[in-house]
Image 1 (cartoon, helix red, strand yellow):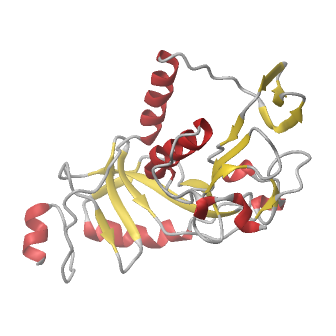
Image 2 (cartoon, one colour):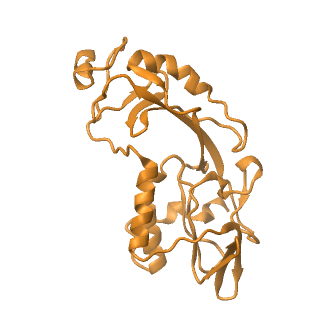
Image 3 (cartoon, one colour):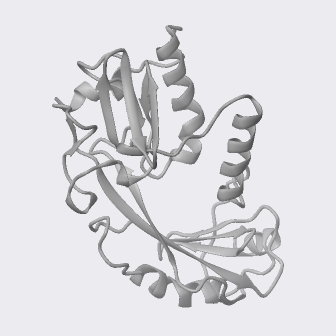
Length: 255
């Protein structure tokens, strides 16, 4: 098995017992570029982006309103689809949060933090290879910025100082596994992912508030789930028959 692994990725080095090959994983070498491309497509199809403060969301006669920076936007129907853990108002991004001003509903939205660091490759990796070191808990993946080293989950307050100890511990093993150069980033990137106790997002109507809808809490999986949860939400909002049962994602499951 080690021999076949090195045939697939000749630059693998060091000692390892073997590998499992997953031949068709999804892969995006520039997530930021993908998001910008989606935004450009949205505008080309007639969509508009408005910057407002989500904390100002309030129910008004005939619908919902948000404001900020001199802007007031009002609409009959509003969907809260904030993808960041900052959607919540709890201290440090933890615990039960108010979903919007004046609501009597709470959702136990918390955070799982994670880190990654890009390193310059000292060899050209295979165009299809990504390596997950299951023993050490890190992944190496070729990205546009270099080879990305990712880590596991860190449980900490959203706004607590960065503690990239997992990156520091993984680096020696990563260098032993693949010919890596110096870091491309000045410091590891840190992100806080919104998560819920049952690891399912909230999708559907807001209880007791006509015209308000939810689609948030995708944990680490927003990039892969967005297409499907967006479709599910759109079908529910327009009265179509949902392609999947929305009941497990209802906000009412939290009481």
